[in-house]
Length: 279
Ligand SMILES: Nc1ncnc2c1ncn2[C@@H]1O[C@H](COP(=O)(O)OP(=O)(O)OP(=O)(O)O)[C@@H](O)[C@H]1O
Ligand SMILES: [Mg+2]
Image 1 (cartoon, rainbow, N blue to C red):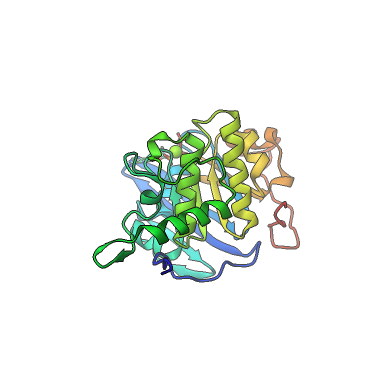
Image 2: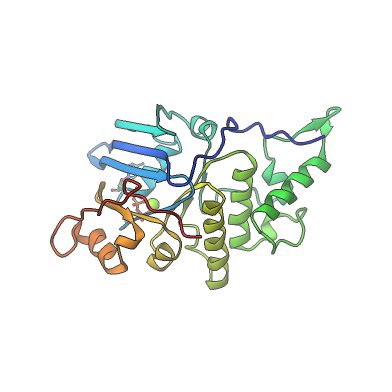
């Protein structure tokens, strides 16, 4: 028996550089607080897009709207070029969007296989069918080059922070996600673990997935991102290929919304503002 992945509809991955997710004019207000004032963002297939911004800029709210936790108050979301309505985390997951939050991604008391199949376990004669789950879990981890895990039957409480992120990402891959959103994936990690997670992020893009990564760490951003988007006070003040920005200008954009006192305008590139992913 093989394990059928019953997650998102099994649409093929889009060609690298093609817009996978697009936000146009997304607005969100909480009482007197205008969290997002018309945010535009494009996340392309096969590329890593970094979402940067100071505390309170609107990064988490943006991600929560994409993942269906908050409804937006205005604007439109497009998925693979088609307008979509995302009203719940279920809607977002059904499209093929997986969000990996820092801590709430996994169940500590369950092992790796159980976590990867949580809620979607294949059954045989009324009992759990363990063998195909183990095969699929092992293959998915191997395809992502996650090699540091000793046993797929170890509880995730025994994993390092980087390994936990890897299992959460593998779970998303197993269930046919096409866009992985990672919220500050390296914030709690040391140097070696950070390197492992960034390598995984690059590999996901290389394999054709779209990746949206929220990060405060500009070293990480410039190490992995093909595109950089900068939010400030609920406005998108720049989105451009990483090659058109540097750390200094991103810091300036985060704090003042300008570069050298001028609004940032991305230079046009052949692929309409996107560049080929790095190998
Ligand atoms: N549930 C909520 N109720 C009221 N205001 C909220 C809520 N969630 C976010 N906000 C407000 O929206 C704005 C954007 O918050 P958000 O959490 O998106 O910032 P952030 O960019 O993720 O910041 P950080 O880097 O600190 O995580 C802030 O002013 C915040 O106070
Ligand atoms: Mg946040």
